[in-house]
Length: 199
Ligand code: MD3
Ligand code: FE
Image 1 (cartoon, rainbow, N blue to C red):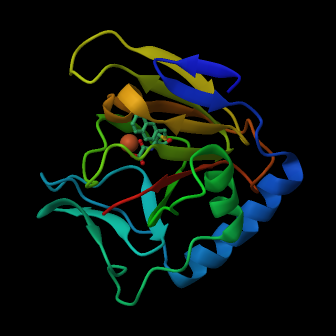
Image 2 (cartoon, rainbow, N blue to C red):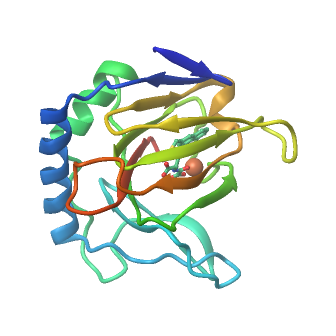
């Protein structure tokens, strides 16, 4: 990694421009089969980030809680995870097991994600892998307890982050997007992929 922030290993510019553009086309194909939707928190508030998934499971949230689902909310299986995403996982996490969810988060200019832990998976020994595409995002990471000190770092298009070990259960979130900082999409926007072993 070129940067380590509280145990999050950041590979700055891991994907070059061509690889980023190819990945965006793969994701357009995924979204055509599994449209983006607006999850609701268990309290019923719509999230500002829109989402969909690829893989055996997709992450989902509504009044009944946060969980993984085997089908898209409109029915039917999730699309398969693009091979180029699995290549990144093999290179930076492990070739021994592939992730069973690739969550696709889509941020417009005013979207954000509050500090949270990722705890919906069965085995926290598996790292989470994140790929940033499009506009820059201010990523914040704390410790595994709520309310402590945090560190912030800008994630740019093509950056890949691996959260393993103690970092796996750290609080983290996205404070804001810097609109118009990437030419990857027409207009503004950010996509973040997170790959996880679920069960
Ligand atoms: C640190 N996504 O989907 S990715 C999420 O940019 C999520 O969309 C953010 O948090 C985004 O759950 C942040 C970086 C990330 C992902 C998982 C982590 C950082 C993490 C798990 C543990 C610690
Ligand atoms: Fe998260």
